[in-house]
Amino acid sequence: MALGRARHRSGGGAAWLGMLLLAAGVVGCSGPIEAYRSVSGMNKNDPDPATAPYTANLDKAETGAYPNLASVPEPPIIATTVAERQTLTTSLTGERSATQANGGTPAPGPVPPPPAIPPGLQAPELAALPQPVPPPQTPLPPLRGLEEPAPPQPPTSPVRSPSIANPPLIEASRPAPARGQPSAMPKPGTSELAPAAIASANPQPSPPPAALPPPQVPPEVAARPAPRLPPALITVASVEVPPGSMALAADMKPHLADIVTQYKQRPRTVRVVSYAAAATGGAEQLNAFRSALDRAQIVASALAGEGIPAKQIQTEASPSTAAAPVGRIEVQLMP
Image: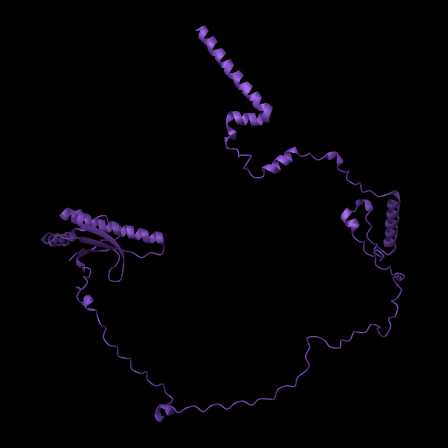
């Protein structure tokens, strides 16, 4: 037993040693990731380097140099100098003093031009472009006080509207067309009505309807037999069962005996129709039909007890009418 275990251990160690040597050889060629993919069989679907697209681009990118991050220049530090801060403080102090002297309203003043961008912060592309020529600086008139009236304006303006010799899209005026004369109304034609009808001004009777020829029935249609109409039901008895009743009255037994006699003479389908009361809502109407079916079932049970098979009896609930009030049950026989 111990010898078998020793052999099993020695065989397992040799297998692991062979796998390690194989992995070491593959690692030396293409790295640990490719070695694992080769041992596990994950690279069996890899594309062929000789036919795969963009292989040259990938090889060139692998052999290329990485960018030197130390060569990126430091971001510029935008800060004001001591002289600029002193000038800004002086201007803000003067504006506050002028606002306080005017009762809280800032005194109007010239809008300062935007500050120039330092050459060190300008992009090379912008620096190569020609710089715009600044507009000429016109001296502003002196400011007047609050109580000082506005200077008088000249009576006439020196600005003149330009005159256009030939203005476009403007046509010369044309004389108006001559006034037209309305055409004479045509004289109505002579009427075909009689003079008496025209004098009375009464509407004339409509013409008689056109006489149409009788329809022509094709011979094949005429040769067919006439369609059979549904059989008309025969009402043999009417039973009054008030709503809420659980059984038939004793005086209804002779009517049921007459129905059973007619059925035995010629067996056929027996219909028991019970009339339900009209209701306003859907639930109330459904309850009325259920109550009518219960009353019809009472009559059907009595007929089955007299000898008519239950499979030949049909029960039905129908809305009540003036001729068939609520509580009436009609027993009908098929012809």
